[in-house]
Length: 67
Ligand code: SF4
Ligand code: SF4
Picture 1 (cartoon, rainbow, N blue to C red):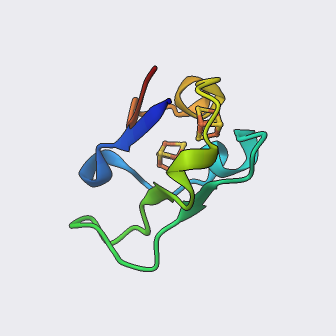
Picture 2 (cartoon, protein in one colour; picture 1 turned 90 degrees about the horizontal axis):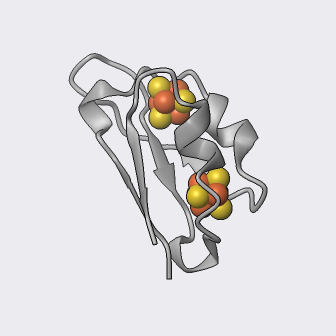
């Protein structure tokens, strides 16, 4: 199973990864990081197919996908 992790403090909440996910499981968190942004997170880890589209799209290398 694929595992997606986010370096939350680097995220600027731009949402590019949200739109990139074909499974629609990446979303922005309700909480804020130290910079005051809503960081990206995953709503359903078990649904991830490990395509890494989210990680490829992120301009700040926040996302790591492991298979
Ligand atoms: S690896 Fe693919 S399926 Fe998994 S969260 Fe990222 S874009 Fe979505
Ligand atoms: S693309 Fe990167 S910086 Fe933008 S919301 Fe997603 S994880 Fe955060």
